[in-house]
Figure: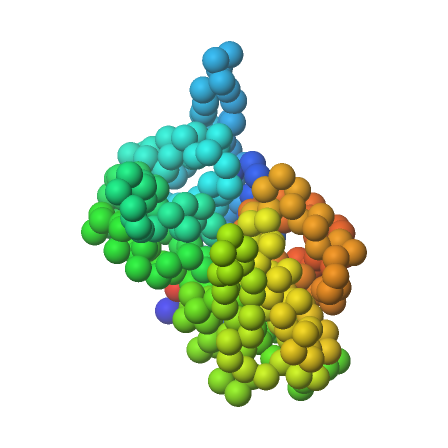
Amino acid sequence: MTLNQQSARTFDDDVLLYFHPSMENLAREIANKCDGQKKEAESYSRRVCFCDKIRWRHFNDGFPDLFIDDVKAMAGKDVIFLGSFHSPEVIFEQLSLLYAFPRYLARSFHFIMPYFPTGTMERIDLEGQIATAKTLATLLSAIPLSAKGPAQIMIYDIHALQERFYFSDTVIPRLVTAIPLLQRELDQLSDCSNLAYAFPDDGAYKRFHHHFKDDRTIICAKVRDGTSRTVTVKDGHPEGKHVIIIDDLVQTGGTLRECAKALVQRGAEKISAYVTHAIFPKESWKHFIGCTPEFENFWMTDSVPHAVEICKNPPFKMISLCDSISESLLGYDLMPQ
């Protein structure tokens, strides 16, 4: 196709980007980033159309009263929805939309859900436990087929990789990682040549160690002593290093703080941390302000909406998923069809 033919293409090839209100800023950044990178590269890719067309209303009883303005515009278009299941209160309203998009004749449908919230409940250890990760995967697997086939679901740093098999064949999970974004940040540190990377348990090590050099990795482990648990350094050498503790998510942060203590006791010079998903229920992030040992940096992504507010307080620092999502879309989803 010649440049003249490319410039003559109509907006019929736009990709429509809808979003949950909690993710509006990230959605706007993604749309701007995709268009900006396209112009900088002087190459043709399809335009991302930021669609603020959903009315997120509620009836008096609290149940959602949703409406998509100009819904006929999505007929024959590739549609993306950027959502967030950060709270049970917002899941039902978004599921209602996810099921509706393909039925309004979207040519294809992609759901970007950075945080898979039930990931830590992926197995049954005792009779009576409920694997809610399977339940949520079943609900998402009910998204109807579009004209081009199954919906694709993009998830960042899911807690257990085997959870991809909880989804049925009617959807396609795309499991991606935000670790390359962290690596960009670490490369900018003045002491980047003196870094070591610690994992608070074997699970975190298995998920992330292949992104880092083996001679710089440290594995911590929880040791149970009666009713108490402590964290020890199981393998690796933190002595004199700026150690970055890496995990997929944080809840109260108790394990991270205990891990930091163990690393300092073994001679770590400085401590920083990174998590993709900063859950921090009941404002537990405040435990990291003025704590001992002190955290030099605590990086997190905007996979959950409240992370943006948390990062207004040091030592927390934001790594936006915008670049990663935009690069993924430009590398595949926005290629000419």
